[in-house]
Image 1 (cartoon, rainbow, N blue to C red):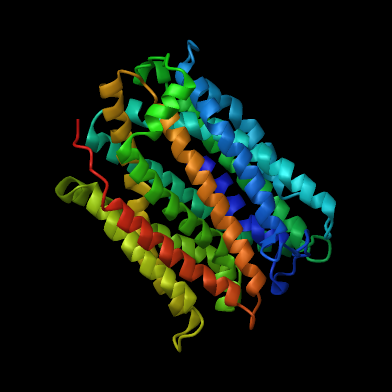
Image 2: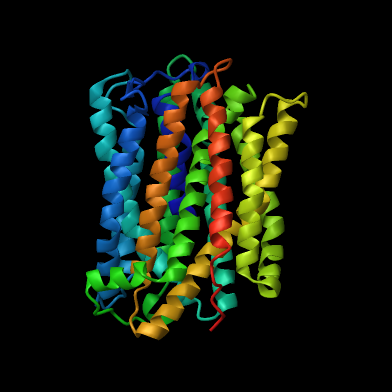
Length: 431
């Protein structure tokens, strides 16, 4: 999980910042910022195109994995094949053909993003399908989901250090190494680390030993119909969808919040992530304990409500008399609390939904469920990046930042709606 997290968060944190940077970044504009129909800017359309194609690919790789009769397992062989392509495309996303604004960069970015998303999906869908197979009991699922979350958060922390490493590389020879070249070298180093972590997972798990592999014989249309008509799963997906739009806005906008709203240096990003990781870890055992006592549902609802309030805080960043560092550290510290539970519990909840469905239908559709979930996650992430980029039309620089602040209002509305929707969810009793 940490390896995949490093790569996907390099895309989330740096993509928009690299291609349409604020004027203070020292980076050149690589694609046009002209709004299509007065609303959609090009980066929003490009990211949406890549994600939509990837989302359509999800159920096919899921069905292939569920029905696989590979003697080495249904999941691990596919994951192994995906590592090298994921690494290559992750790097190429950040290597535009020209270091200046041009149409060629747009075409290049579309194809590189599609390549990365398809490759990473080939890894993550089978990976997530292992969860209900590796963790038989309810608390086993929570514990495994917790460790998955730890890996994911570590990946975020590593990716957030990109600008610190970029500074260090550029300082080796400021006269010869440009800002964009230093950032590209950083991407290669971090993506390579991510690939190594992904390989460790593939080599360490003996799927035939730890999983009961029963290939599914159900046709794709029937599997999708059974999955999408599961009422509990529908509620889970709607809440999950809203949450991921909101979280994508945070990850895409972090550098703008720091450098534009608060006028702090880029390098503060890694300190913020370290703080978020540490605070999250403090709450991990608390979340595990509370899940046993009061259940997962109430924790998720409270976390979403708290996160909605935190989004309101984004709107007011830089408007307070408090020092900018106090403002951002306070916001990140409080955000770490709901993110701790929302990184752990959804996977455990989904694993229980899948397990209950398997008992009722006598069919194993683990990968299909995760594929449908990640289909909507990817659509949500696409919406998140697209909406964030669209709002930048209304201001993305110091003194003209209204577009950035609007994202705080949007995040508030989305998380609040997600909390309301999840109140209708019927928690699955542990099996």
